[in-house]
Image (cartoon, helix red, strand yellow):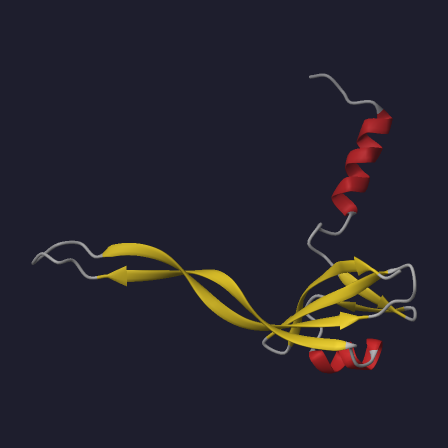
Length: 118
């Protein structure tokens, strides 16, 4: 069996130690608010947002429909359901991107960059 060069092994070891790509956070004055934090924790770390917007996010939902025929199998149908969430926008200074925090069920669901402030 061939062995890998030490540099390749080091790279693989480094990549396996990195947090998953979905791990997101918002830096607020040296404090991080991350996915899973409560709304209370987010406000404690980052203050009040410059805006809060209620949004409807489509999410798949499985529905079972009974058969039209006696003894027939029910049919599985996937539909889109509107899930109400909030987008909180944080101003991070001139020349920086806005921070947009999506809040669902009282906790941070995701963090992303918005437009760059000019």
